[in-house]
Structure formats: C-alpha cells, structure tokens
Image (cartoon, rainbow, N blue to C red; front, side, top):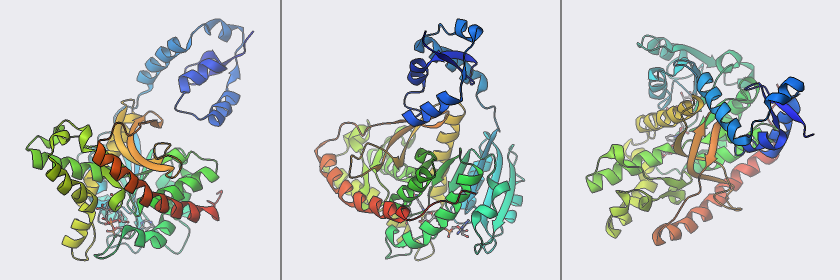
Length: 402
Ligand code: NAD
Ligand code: LMR
C-alpha cells in the first residue's frame, strides 16, 4: 500500500505524488522532500480520509486558504532606509495600507531625520498600523541591532543606500550599496528568513543576484529576494497613456529585462493601447522609458534621484505582495532568479504572480514584435555582465549564521 502522510496545513493525508502535484511550482523538489519528511505518517484514521485525489485536494486547500486568509491589519512591514528620500513617503503609503498592522521604520542613527521621529509622525495617521522607529549604528553589524525591528515581518522593503548624482550610472553605486544591502539582508536571513525582501537599492541588476545568491548559499529561498522594478512599468504606463490619450488606469505595459538603461525593455505590443503606438512614438517612448531615471536625476541637479514616484511604485509592489499573502493572487513585473532570460541571464524581470507564499508563478515574456526581439538581444548583452558582477560579489562571501 502506498504510504500517505498528514499535511499539517489541513490535517488531511496524501500520497507523495498528490502532495507534489498540489505544491507544484511553489516548492522545488528538495524543499518538497524536506516538507514531506516533516509530515507525520498517516495512521488508519488518516488513511481512511486520504481517498482525496490531487484535484479534490486543491479544493480542500482552497477552502482552507479562504479560512486562513489574513484579516485586515495583520501584516508586519519593515522599511529599511525609512527616513530617506524614498523611505519616508514609502513608509507613509505602507502606514495607509489597511492590511498593515505593524510598520517598522528603520534607518541609521546618523540619518537626516531620526527614524523614531518619522514613526511618531506616521503613528498619528487614522489607520490600524502601529508604527515604530529603529535606528542602527552603522559601525556595528545590522544583524545585532535589528531583532525587534524584523521579527515577525512578512515584507521588508529596502530603499536604503546611496542615490545617483548627474553623470553617474547605477552601476557606480555598486561598491557602496552592495555592502549596505548585505548587512540588511544578513539581518533578515536571521530574524525573518520567511519574509519577502523587496530590494529597491541600486544597482538592482547586480545587487539582487548578489543577495539572492547569498540567501541560497545559506540554504534559504532565493525567490524571497526580489528586485523592485515596478517604477519602469509605472513610467511606461504614464508615457503611453499620455501619448495615446487613453486612461492611464487601464494601461498595463509589461517592462521586462532589468533596471538600468538598455536592459529596461517595455513591451508596448502586449498592451491594448501600447500596441496602437506608431513607429515614431515607439522610437521616442522606448528610450524615454530606459532613461526616465536619468531624467529625474538631472532635473534634481545633484540632490537625489526619483523618490516620490519610487515610493508610489514601491507601494504598488508591496500591495501586490500583501494581496498575494492575504490570498488574492496578484501580478506585477519584478526582477528575480528566473529561467526566463536563459542561461546567460539567470536573473530577469518578467510578470510574476504573487500568492500566499510569495512568488507563485514566473511568467514567460510572451510574444515579441520585431523591434522588441532586436531589443531583447541588447538587453541580454548588458544584463549578463551586470548579473555576473553580483554573482562574483557573492562568490567569496557568506551571510552569518546568527
Ligand atoms: P536617500 O539617500 O534619500 O535615502 C537613503 C536612506 O538609506 C538614508 O536615510 C540613509 O540614512 C539610509 N541608509 C544608509 N545605509 C543604511 C543602512 N545600513 N541601514 C538603514 N538605512 C541606511 O536615497 P533614496 O533617494 O531614498 O534612494 C535609495 C536607493 O534607492 C538608492 O540606491 C537609489 O538609487 C535607489 N532607487 C531605486 C529605484 C528603483 O526603481 N529600484 C528608484 C529610485 C531609487
Ligand atoms: C530610477 O529609475 O529612477 C532609479 O533607478 C534611480 C536612478 O538612479 O535612476
């Protein structure tokens, strides 16, 4: 007789095959095997109940999911760099989200505004979130100072790090920002290893591969480490809606590849309004979407990069994650470890469905027109090197165990 085991999530007994079928796409084989090992072997009673086939199991799980869906105000969100240019408005938008019950605003003791001040300010908003500020000393490891800040977190957003000045590329920020990210990601790996990490810090194209690889080297899920590229979609939507005169709220341009210059590839052909753009309009809007960050950096004249539109985009990303965790699967483009870019580009932005456990499905890039196909070659040529820079960084480093 085939052995059955009890899935603690719904108390039902299943064969190994049934359990694999249900969790397909959510757990890799090794993780599935590890989970199977934690399940109690079904006794007579359990076995009697276990006539359920994979399909029926999906039903059982769906209703269990509905029962266990998080009520409002039950998520804990952390904003690292929460006293900064992006951090403050992003923390505001997070405090306004009714799904957020607890919000940690974390920054340095030397930040322009003490994080406790940002938290006191946000704590007066008429929303359920309890807001707390946490300041860390930059000369000491983040992991030793962030237990209370991170413990129990579902989502950690990281806009901590240096922004560009005119004339700089995002890549110029790598040496400084990779160190900042590593300290924070290490702290997360210890205090909230199950949380989703949304990395906003630049250069996203290299920092995310570095941090996801360090997570994986520690035995954690690299798909918990996600690069936030939502701003590219937000910009493309706005530019297309403006050019076509159509409502921006109904415009959805997927932007794939990465988050720097030519690696930013808007797929206008995949949106009902975007596909009506003329060749001339595409010639203008494709490079504008690629260079929109620089447009803001230059306009701010050395006083920072996009902060308000990034906070908006960061909140859009966060809302998708929290909706997914709460049981309402939601899709946004994001940059993560992915098979979509092929062997050369093991990290890639495409549409991602976020569900109850975070990344639920990585969508392929779909059908491209001739222009997009040519651009994809450019994307991969640049992205490959930027990914390798991150992988190289992670090669001789590890995250501390505790
Ligand atoms: P900022 O300088 O205004 O704020 C950064 C904050 O991070 C500061 O308050 C600083 O004290 C804090 N910080 C530094 N080290 C820290 C640490 N170890 N722990 C906690 N906090 C720390 O910069 P900003 O304009 O908010 O930009 C932040 C980052 O976001 C930059 O790297 C920028 O390039 C990037 N960015 C990314 C996107 C994107 O689309 N992904 C968009 C805009 C900006
Ligand atoms: C952006 O796209 O606005 C950010 O990546 C910041 C930058 O340096 O351009």
